[in-house]
Length: 366
Image (cartoon, rainbow, N blue to C red; front, top):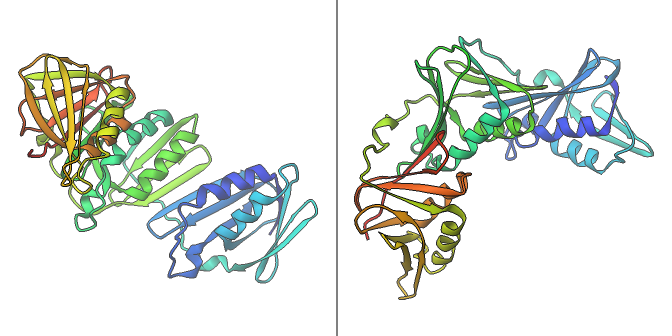
């Protein structure tokens, strides 16, 4: 293999692969990325056997070929090279030569035939949607994925297409739930799949970078995403997602509308003295607004009042303050709508002008 390409193109392709590469690898080849030179382009592939990403960059290919090289080492070298100089890669028997301007590097490599193949499963369910839309949907829901590995089915995001052509992303950790949905512009078969956390975060990053439409393929065992010059594949979590529809409350008797930033600032201050394990915060809703208070076992206290538009009877509810702040951080609207029934029922929170995303939080006994 012998190719020449711009430093910027190579850096971007290699950088995308960094979060895919297995950091604590037990198989040496998984610390490497696969470089393939063909048809005036360089293909850069990374995988951890669960999630895989293939990116590409335009290149002048003098000799076709392929090789694997340490992802971290190659990235660190490229980012330190002169941005104005092109980069030449050339393979030897068991090394890669990197040249740029006055810089010369020789880096050890492993044979490409040891690198796991990036298999792409066929799929009946494919859909096209804007990158901005997918990025927003992931941003609105990813925070509620569980970190409890004993309940694997909660550690990912449900991607669902229903019979009415609604694409829906749902996450829950058992204490809170986040949902974001959008109507598709084309027909797609109904499908459900649970996408692992790592793949979800990569989908978000690629969606944010892609100014074009992206394509998603929802298979029985794999999700595949095509975003510009990048192809992401991931195995799915083989489990059944909870019946989330039963968790979303309806028919609320009262609601409060409050400025999101101000509400978040008050919560942040109150949590300084909240219990460091339960993070419990007390919210008292009244026609005067919301009184927010917190205390801990050392008898320290915080109290603050915030203006709110509230239309119900006086109600006091306890919450995990971290859950509240995570939810507010996922909402883009200037004001949030809090819908509630009583002190023990789930609360529905959404942006005042947002019809796409909804969030449910279970209250705490106070």
